Length: 170
Image 1: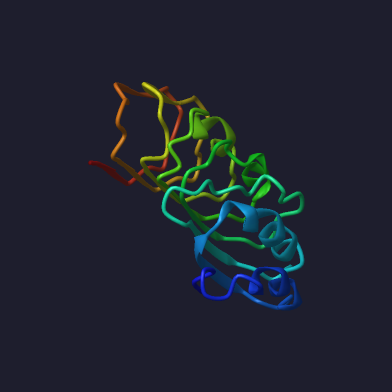
Image 2: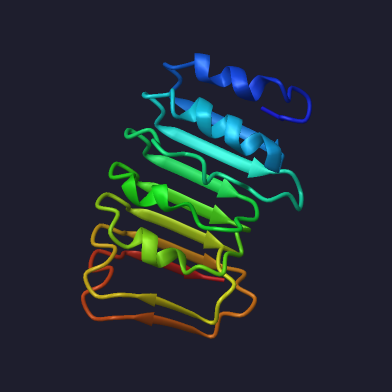
């Protein structure tokens, strides 16, 4: 759904409480709070794909009760602050962060997700070092890292990502 064409739809999405998958493109910053309010009403949501409009900030901080059944999440756009609610997504299996360029290390929030098997980070962090800490990412099987402008080091501590089968660094 391209929000530029149907901007008023964002606040009505909450009526689709049985929705299982939602994809929204060209989201404007000001639509963030209404989208979060709508998503909180979607108790059966398993897949969510959100892409911001060009240089707009993807503001999803207002999501206080994310859908507990969410298994697939893709966030594409500039995140000023990494959403802490992601750490409560215990059923999340597949996560893609694209273009977030956050100064916050996303691994701090993600490492304890109990069912995460695939993680894609594409221009998702604007720091010099990523550290996969011991005992983190225990079910992760696939890791894709791409297009980090300032990244110099990727550190993997012993005991991290013990089930990793596929690693792609581009």
